[in-house]
Length: 130
Image (cartoon, rainbow, N blue to C red; front, side, top):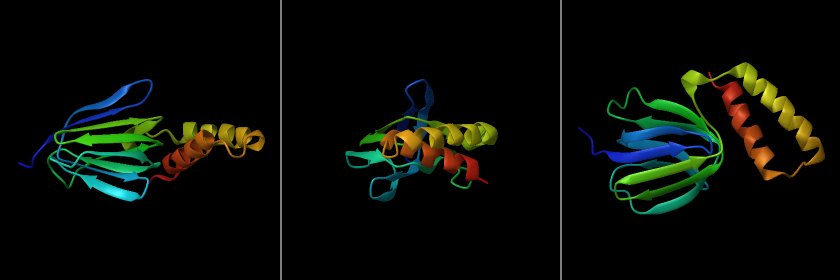
């Protein structure tokens, strides 16, 4: 069995995952990174992306879509806090479409709002996920 670490994924409103994992692949500021057990301490911002969590069988990872946030690792723990996280099996494309319309309307008056731009990228990923 692969070496495991404690993984915690949460948003401001809920805890989405709090268990062991053997690998997480996620997009940080400079590109995608894979984190295994015993990773060096690391802190970075997260970019909106599709991410994978491997628990045991690498052929069946948990897949999610995440907005902007932060990741912090230590030898045996990874903490992720993000504004929005959706597991791919829970995708609601109609909601994503409505949210994108709201965001586009808000961007007309606040075109450089980084939170809105990040959420637009997140909901675009949700809407386009196959």
